[in-house]
Amino acid sequence: MADEKKQNPLEKIANSQVWKSIFRTGIPVTRRQRMMAILNNVFLHLHPVRLPKHAVKIKYTWCMGGLSFFLFLVLTISGILLMFYYRPTVEYAYTDIIDLTEQVPLGVMREIHRWGAHAMVIAVWLHMFRVFMTGSYKPPREFNWSVGVLLMVITMFLSFTGYLLPWDQLAIWAVTVGTNMARAHPFIGHEGPGASLLAIGDINLVHAGSDIRFALLGGRFVGEATLLRFYVLHCIGVPFIAMILMAVHFWRVRKDGGISGPL
Amino acid sequence: MAKPTASIGKNENSTTDNSVDRKGFISWMTVGWVAFSAATGGFFTMMIRFLFPNVLFEPPQSFKIGYPDDFTKGMVDIRFKKKYAVWIVRDQSGLYALSTVCTHLGCTPNWLNTEQKFKCPCHGSGFRKTGVNFEGPAPRPLERFKVYRAEDGQIVVDKTKKFQQEKGEWENPESFLELA
View 1: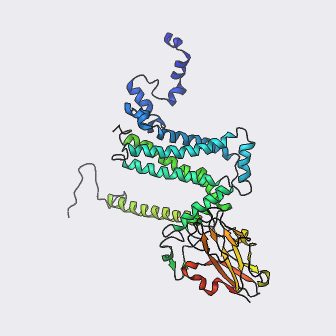
View 2 (view 1 turned 120 degrees about the horizontal axis):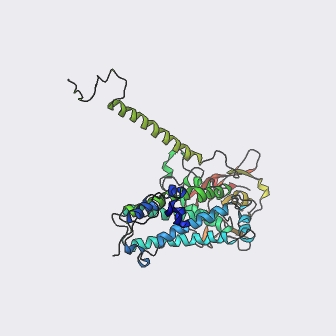
View 3 (view 1 turned 30 degrees about the vertical axis):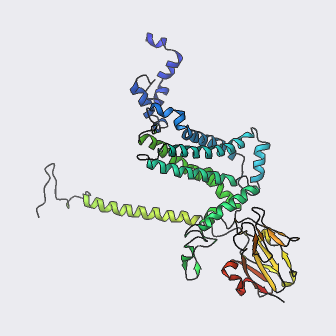
């Protein structure tokens, strides 16, 4: 009992039932405890328990993977905040963006989201470049490279869907031009190869009102329905897939033998 | 056929008790998984179908534009550009409906009356009054739509049927309306 009185406040917290119920291993003193502290935490366990020395060399990794993830978190938080003010309708979208920059407290929030998005695209590309140049896509990491390619495509798609939301001339025409590519998709784009084969008699099954571009736009041109579809994809649909793939990506870094070594 | 008897416990003939044996378990599992896959596949189909609404809040694809007298010879009518994305061109022999979608990347050109050409603001493609491209990156002429007279004498433009010059479709009598 005498020992208990000598405990300093920090130790008291660390020995309380609340603390122990959350962090079950106690203060990590031994190697085993340090390992268990990582393994017993749902967030930390995606990360390797131990890192090889070369893995923390900034010259080797450029920290671009970590930065991409950090930027994703920044964009998630700032994006959720923007959702409190932005209304995805033809009537309000443009003025709400003006509102966000001119009148809403900390107008930089919109700029953080915008510049963060640019930075994330750059970080993802540089991460991919680094992984390629260090040969880290080779077995046993070939599956994780594929997951990474999907994540890169998803980053571009997040960027593309977000681009429409300010609903200015640049946004509308950029998305008009961009989505015109979907017309040429084989079989499911109405101007693509094979689309004319999908017909019953002389009735085309794949036309401007039933192809993949229509599903993306919610209409025959970029309009009100497109704004809403892109908003939902940008805020919920695509980030949801991105989060699942990121969990797999980080987990596989660890399971495929950790970060690759220097050449 | 002598059945091998298990050495542990009182293993009676399996037909007398109602427990599920290995074979029965596997066939029930098969039925279960087939049903589950069918239900999942059905729901996936519903998800795809859900993306295609039955009613579109867009201007109709086929619409009346007025009587032949409403159009002046030699003029490009831009009244229907914003709502229906067509120009109505009245030349000496008749009338045709041009799509306002640039054949380069899909922007909307403007009719410049003084220069007598359609000019795209995005990348500078130019089209003659006929719709034929002559400058800039546009690879082919503007598309034309089907035009015909309705019962009441008004002119109808049907955007579901398009005619492309490079396919020789402008020769098709549906692609223009002969007027005196």
